[in-house]
Length: 359
Ligand code: F6P
Image (cartoon, rainbow, N blue to C red; front, side, top):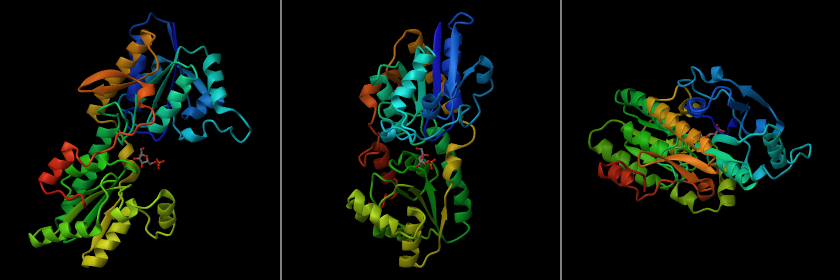
């Protein structure tokens, strides 16, 4: 008999349902009939804290491989507030443990990104059996080559840049496509390269606006009428990168621009007189059906997770390393971000073909 809990936490992404389906199918295909009970907690950790759950049946997992979003709902419950009692004085960690033990769970399968993973590790330290599956369009989870959601989001952001390309080539304009990613630039880097962006600005490589303008000028002088920039939400100027967190916050509070892309657009327009347009695909990047890559990845991660559960092996994230699914101790990865290094081969190769990073 196996009794497992499932929850999806943090910003949603494509293939959350596909991953849960993989886990449940892996278990149900290898356990005798009626030897599996699955409880779904609603809206991430909220459901576990407040006991908002439902028993799920095989029917719930049928036909969801291609369905975006999450059948369980999700919410952001910041890790730093987990030890802080709620407004009614409830101890959230104790409440989560209580609901876990009340249902007699063998294990909790938690799907989420970095913040989610930190709380998953906290629950592990508190003695619960945990398996974590790495979801995020940001691909910034340490210990796995790929997170699910990333490839689907790359497809969407690339489509956005592709669409801009056709209109850009009809006008002598500069176009900025703002790609998701506040802390890391993997999505911008990959979509930027795939979409043929001329300039890619990411948080890990602070930009100099004069270098950005030089890159635009170079194209103009070469007779190219338009330039496309892929800019991460968290792109930062060299000047701002030198500020302390507090100084930066104060500066940003006074910033009239809705996002960094609009600030860059205004600076380019002011210095060059060239027309600049900004496109923000925003949350479309997290929406829609998972791409085939993510469907395969999550089916594999789900199957590997089910194998661990059948073997009573807990306390792991299941990732993919060099094409193979791998169990990685949660304690080794929780709290670590996988960032783009300016020395990454992919950055160097992009620079090799003339893509500017504004540095
Ligand atoms: O972490 C995933 C992500 O989509 C980031 O790329 C983005 O910066 C952030 O979430 C947006 O968060 P929210 O959905 O809370 O606006």
